[in-house]
Length: 240
Ligand code: CAA
Image (tube, rainbow, N blue to C red; front, side, top):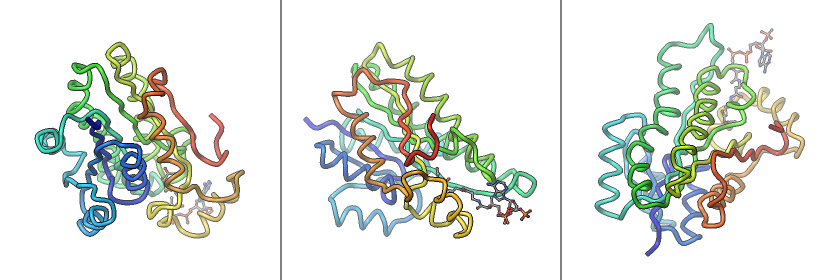
């Protein structure tokens, strides 16, 4: 029977590309999303992939949502923690709410999804968790103390949980994307983005499918010896 994979924030951007890639690789894929019903319907119409709506930053909602997926689709073998938001601003202008929302969703979401799914993977002796970090969690970024802290936290979370999962056949890895041509990056003011792109040795933004390919490898049988690692996919912008 096909393994079940859930991708948070899976109906748009990088998440959607990951859903499509894992679907093509033979997983039974479900997407989680928080707000955009039209994107969820579009994903279903284009690919047949079902979506489930909840806020990954809400602990109880994540536990209940994953339970529902397990009842309706099957035990979850693969979690891709992709959901994330930005609330950019320099620290002296950043509100506590902008700090807290980014931590709650980007980092808290990883904890909530792992709490829901890791115990079952551990008991069954097989699992894959892939957390989407960021170049900005590795290198920092002007105007992103919240996002950089949350993404850096994801890299620490990954290495700690990898140690707990290793002897149970559960691998936990991270991907650190650079600047990818998604709506999130399109929201960066054009003059700022131009300067960022000028510093990417490959000379362009990345594409969502280039991240999805890395995720697919980490979810495969072949990657059973890869755990606690971070795969940087950033066009050479930061070599870490
Ligand atoms: N380093 C040093 N100084 C910088 C700087 C940098 N990287 N960026 C801006 N500054 C300076 C500016 O030159 C300016 O200085 P002066 O006033 O002396 O001219 C000052 O900081 C203020 O800059 P802004 O006018 O841009 O300030 P603002 O308050 O209007 O906006 C900001 C600040 C919202 C942070 C804006 O600069 C911005 O959006 N930056 C982009 C942040 C970014 O890269 N976000 C990534 C989003 S995508 C993502 O996160 C996905 C991923 O994982 C990669």
